[in-house]
Image (tube, rainbow, N blue to C red; front, side):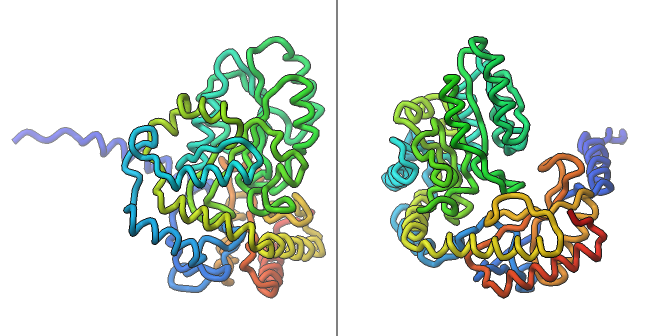
Length: 404
């Protein structure tokens, strides 16, 4: 019998294993871990109850039984899935009810649901601009925004982080050269926790006839007097052309939305490929999100607790001489380490101490800026914040991580 030729998968596996080994050697290999039973700011991880400072469950709604009950009621009556794209037979009245609520919440005419924030950005940006247009992108914008820009095939000007003088120079130099100009930024930057200077940015955009696009995934539900996000915090609610947000962070469910004018949403219905060519989100999740929005607005103590606890943690780190970027009460607390291997050693040390924190490495952040990304929740008791601060400082000192 003739010998069989090597399977193509053999060479594929050899090549991919080499890549994985290289990632591991550089401290950049990732893996999944099973997390269960989210309760009161903790999770069950490998059978042990662990304080969770790694999730984006800022308001503590992900495990709220009221959301589960709202979802269960729709599951019972409507089943598990939308069964089709929304433009075919996957559009449910609860989708539209949620979109109306989101539009009112953001002080705009209309909103449109997407299955995820990533899909919202990679669908919306190419629907708005193309090869004859220019995009001004903050240097620290999220990967989903960057990928949306690549798909648009527009000219992209990368603006130094929150540098409005640089943005104005670019807008002035480009005046009259392009069909459309789009300024894209995050409301709260997901890895640094700082706030975009939205009020002067919107004014600058108006001066030069540019459109504004703000991804407020991490601000919605937490910032502003009524939790409407970074736009409310900065006094530009209802003044941004395109507002994007996710439902899987402070609101504790899943999915995302784009909010703006009726004309914008009509265009996206017809041009956003990641909306047109995908199954609608499960109606039960839309129902759960409606309940989450009701709770978030009726229980302001949740956002107040997040910000108070974030201030408490930041103060303790500063007392140890640590530089903590971002807002004084910012709920995303980055602690820069630099080296990815050392970063993950600190993450492992904290895990042994009973604390789950995020270790962020390239390509999520630029090389040399690996960090701990600590997320604060309304569910964290003040004494747990104090315990984290003490153990974090001890782990940083033991690792040799430099102070500011």
